[in-house]
Image (cartoon, rainbow, N blue to C red; front, side, top):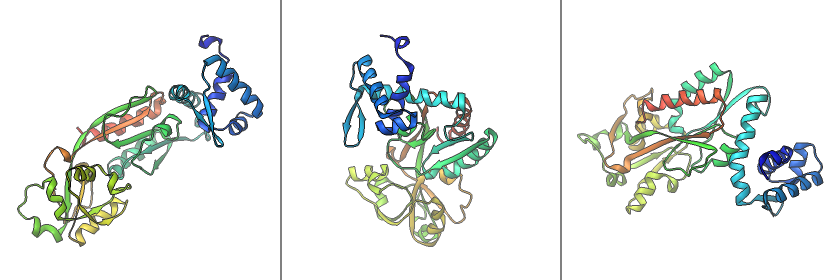
Length: 300
């Protein structure tokens, strides 16, 4: 059998099943009876030579073969829907992006400007340090900006390394006497200070702290939050140190009474990457290109 011999309506059923994991929800979404969905799945199993799903509780879990199809089929349906009929939830254009909070100051102006030019609603979703593969494939987000490198290759997703930057130590007047005359800090010296930590993930999941743990080191956190807006006031008021990407400090407007020191060694360098669907429509690609251009001024 080839694709021309396959009933395209069956692919619609498979697409919805892959996104819902439920026969009943698939039937509801397609305005079919559950028995019609079951019949369509039976025809697909026979045509493709694979069971496609296995039941676990109330969910239908895709087989490895079905997951491989999912990587290609879902982005294709989403792209066709956007090109032919607009956004799934109405006529409004929407661009959903996930990015680390340290990049908010850098990218917010460009997001607002390009979103306005495209007539789109920009949605910045909370960042979590995890894989966002399924959300990207299923069109729940349009762009992931994250720290790291060497992501698993998926043909339906475009991975692009933007560049790298270094981590720096930021501190205020309460630490200036202790750090006077210093040109840099070593990785090992971080444990001598109390730290301000403003990542939305646990310390054990933070790459810098994982590197410290591997070396038998640890740094003490004295103030934790998920809002970088709290950093400058805290450092000006207490003998705390914050380890941040250099671009965050470069784009910070309120640097009054704050000082920085570079961190020595390759452990203080981090890479940044973008990931989005290969089938992303043109207006979203233009927005992504503008964001990448803004980032490359700081990540090289």
